[in-house]
Figure (cartoon, rainbow, N blue to C red):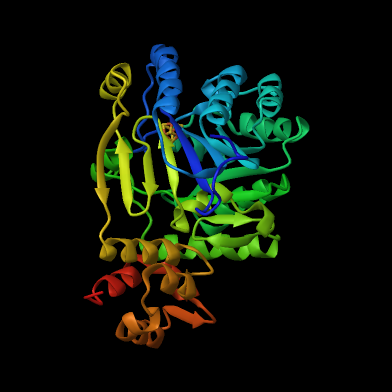
Length: 389
Ligand code: SF4
């Protein structure tokens, strides 16, 4: 199938590659990642085979996202090979957004230049912080200087669509410490910024340290204040918030790929632990390498499970994901998709939430208010509890 012959009746879908290797496991991380780099070659062979094995009907794709893990542990010809294999096996549109996540400490000028030449047109740099103490707390492999150097070189080598990831909400973090990071990030004029709240996921080393009383996490109120500081600082500096953790210089630079997750658009996930979503079906790959590699060896897609979302589950997902976006839930689209009137379906919940100033209803959208952003989970629960739909 190629882009010229594909049907365009379906929305453009996205492809995600999960590359599971990291130099070192960060203590807060609960993504599937491993540090045994000796498996890099067999894994890459398997990923090529998976690409050829998977079939997803008549979809055309306009985003490819290489994430992980640390995809920049693969050299440019390997990354270019993956992009080529996707082009051979799927209908890929000519203006496809191709994002590579890179971690400082794993790339240099030559490598970045070569990634661009093999087709990567968007780079997302996992900086997390520009402050050495915070980088150490987060267990990152890179220094502040390496983060700065990676950003500079990415620009010099011609990346004109660059994202920087930051983490906020570290124990003891104050608004002024957060602003130091934001100020430094903004000084490089990136097209995109992601500011993720540090979370304490079950089973991570960081959560164990916290539970052992080695540090005191910030309260919800403190992290809510830091989110407001972030939104206000970035707004003044020309970045619009379009999702709870994501900011872009203009609508042109909104992450096209990640928007598919929030917009309920189909996506294909390749690699261990990757999820795919072709409504109403969701499926997910094995989250460990041995069964993943074994299935592929036997010519089987490495799928660990699948579920067909009920209408109720789809509605709840559309609400959860829609609330994450600053534009909110598109009620017209909702009505077209579910053939039901949104305002009528959630009449009581909407009344309560509006009275509490947690949501705002405006033309065709239902979105969180500034106050509601702090209580997203509670707001979503009010919709869940709204009952039969
Ligand atoms: S580099 Fe990223 S994926 Fe790897 S361990 Fe750290 S946070 Fe997890």
